Length: 251
Image (cartoon, rainbow, N blue to C red; front, side, top):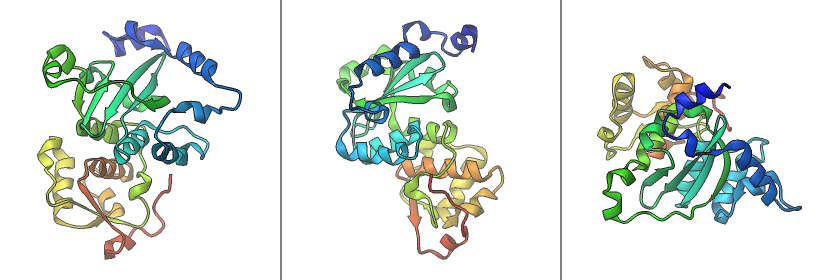
């Protein structure tokens, strides 16, 4: 891809980012004789999160960013994810306990990226510390932090994964938790209408996919996003849970 195209994607940050080729060489140099690429890619993680992510890696593919973030949230593990975007590496750090995320790029600039192009190179226990409130109040620092929920929602809707996360897939029906505050998501259009319907009724994936403005992929993205906001109830016994028949995934 021409450099001009990449620089227009990262107008203020490309010069400060590590080149992906150099980062891959560094990872290869660090790998011992008995290490595998999976071992090196999932470096120094808590055992529970490491085993969680191995579910995806053992299928012969790398973990996707949404899967990594979901795992970090489930296990309350603060991790740094090294992401390749074209020729450079972008570091993203999640602090689940503090409900914060840090990006080496300003968060607004990160969210303007084509999120489907991000490739997970490495996941490791973070060495960053959450800044004190006084430091976080500084505009230059604040620009690199965002509420975790906002990032998870954007990744679910616009990231690479367009299948249900394993925790909510299979024969299931869905409804939004009554106490969940939808205003935090700044919903508009068909997403707002769908969420209002999901607040009122328990519904199958197949039915959601037939709502105005939706298809199967968009329905699954929305459900992933609601799940990661802790705003989704999943039932396996409701009559609607049988409506999808064999139409589900285990990816």
